[in-house]
Length: 503
Image (cartoon, rainbow, N blue to C red; front, side, top):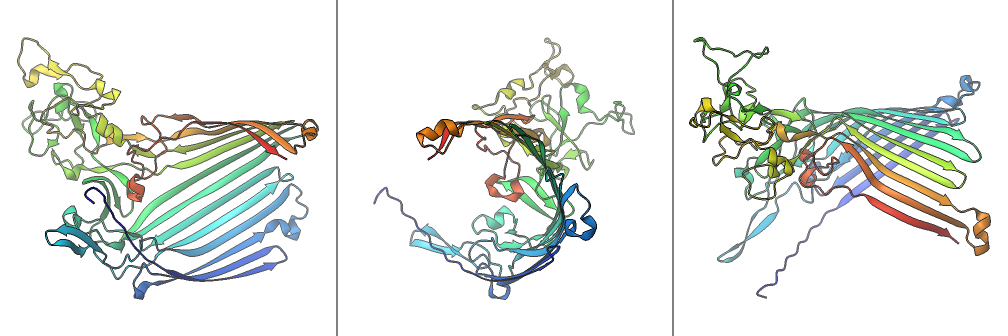
């Protein structure tokens, strides 16, 4: 009893649903489907418990029309149209109400409200519009599928983004935060390149892109932030994608005396009314001297051009959503041998390398990355001179990491573009090679099928990302902190050798 710890929890929830569908088929050419479902969830209060979600789909087999009968190359041509509404109730049990939390007191266990309630919480709804085309040609040796879509999501379910002093003890309420829009298209191309008795070659290629935009926010503030601890890493505002990286833009390093002065587009010094050179912006309340802002510190962009660096100089510095994704696979068979290669790729997304932010900080006393060896080494120009502004510079011109400073007045390792990297990659996802033994050789052993194979997963990844693995999900499974490499375990290379036997 002196060391044992016990805890338990109990919860309850319920959902009631009704579903109906009607299908109509005319001459296998015109296909109609109508669906209506109603869902009731205990996650919402009585006034908003039920959601109604209809949908409709239309298909037209153009290849079955009389005017297509003589078009021999086309085996199948189908147009698809779809519209529907789906609901999301993933806000947690009793999300609209107030749960109780306990805390030890001198009088025993005490209870207090664990979260703020919101009895107006209701279903999140997504309206989807889709148009698609299926095409098969040349005896089905070429298949092309394309879909374009538009999805509008309203009444987004999420916990409110409130100041820490409000939520330090009591959790934020679940709210309907706003609306977003997703649109894009996907296409697939499958081909049978060669098909003979002894040899065949098939390929498949997929391509997709999505564009995301916030169209409405219902909170009084104009943004929703994604945080790790007390630090803001992403920001979501109307008219922009969800969860973009938000911080300071690093535009250089103070290496020489000239770096402390503003230059124009031609590289000439800018002068004030008294023909004095203008100093670059530095953190508010700081001055240029050795124990404050000095050689070896990063230069941050003065976004609002007010002459100082402060929170108003933060900006969007990267989007974790890729510009497009793609995949490729090919299968070759020769007599009893088979070979398969599969590739996947992501292009145009950004990744925030949180490990670099932490483990390239030269003020740490352990566990630093090798990159930190390129830290700025500040020294004297004239060894016989003093530690003055005119007589100091960064000795190693290839320095990439900020200097060591007892007083980190510049806060060099703040959330900034310095740690935002290109997350594009091409990965060889799978390679397999197999051999199926001829049946005439194995039937004497009463074996129906015998296949020997070798398979390797994730053998090669081509990327410029400096971390362990560019395939990053969302930190803490939160859409507001996507693309943050917070020590995600990398994909492993897996080698498999096996034998399939059917008796």
